[in-house]
Amino acid sequence: MEVLENRIPPVVVAAVFGALMWLAAYYLSGALALPIEWRVGLALAVLLAGASICLAGIASFRNASTTVNSLQPETASALVCSGIYRYTRNPMYLGFATVLLAWSVLLASLVSVLGVLGFVLFMNRFQIRSEERALANLFGTEFEQYCRTVRRWL
Figure 1 (cartoon, rainbow, N blue to C red):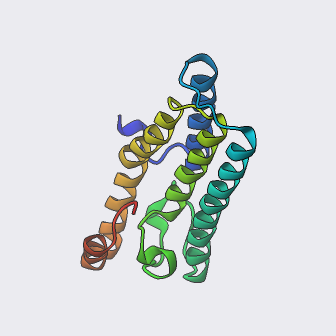
Figure 2 (spheres, helix red, strand yellow):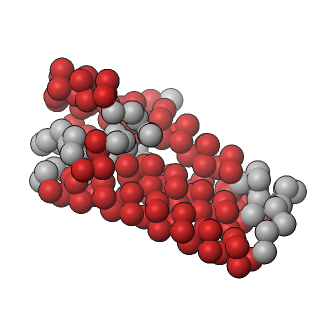
């Protein structure tokens, strides 16, 4: 399955899982009886949190003058350990997962939460693993130390 490693842009992966979540919510039972006002309000709050996490990751990369292109991690010019990267090694992916969680809240479907889990599992296997190999090759012990002190997701 190496053919999938670093081949699909993470935003496309998130969009595909979002569509699958909608299909699951539409065709499978398990809807939560939450008033639409609550769902929209909570979904907007979670969406704002997810977008903020993503933007904080992008800003940290821009401040370090390194690439945000996740399909070519070997082109990184700096190991970013500051800003939001002090708390998570993958804030952009965490942000996407949080946005998918907001979508799940809006859908009010328990089964749609599986899409968030699916996204996380896919990213771990087909994106993050290969990124971490590339960063270990580029930054060696500095990256290994970073991995020991900062968690992959939270």
